[in-house]
Length: 233
Picture (cartoon, rainbow, N blue to C red):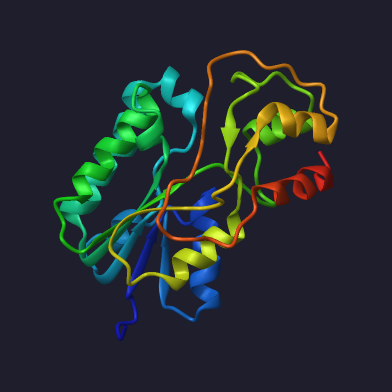
């Protein structure tokens, strides 16, 4: 890659975008972080690669705000694809596009992916449940704080360290197609509750969040136990 502005990372200050930005810099790649403040400033630039990490990640919020989630997920992706100038698009999505097709969140994620399929030079990266130092919401935080979890205790989660996610993406910018990345074993939420001695109660549907991939990733879901035990919240 030769150009000064070769990579545009849209949504660089989000939970996932921030870690991707970190590892692109570690790999000494030229990247410009794009957010709402400077979006229009760079829209007319030519980029070798655009990474779209700007979509909302709040499933309950999406359910309560379907029109806003559609706008921020599908319409925003359409705007990037049609109005930005790039050679390749990497679209950061969610396994909810596969396993939660009956939800607002999952439906919109799948619609955004479908838009990218119209571009020959694309990579769609689906992520599952993640953990890391800046995590502020989700079942791990609820379990740690002994709060109710609104999914069934038998739900199976493939938790993955977000640093692995960031490094993997920064190291595999050349790939194409659709890939789910993360831990390929899992832990049931009720088992995790027992291990960490949480007092949380479960209520709601089964919510399996499992990674399916032909690739092998050196990640163990059970590493999340040390993370959650070390949380100081």
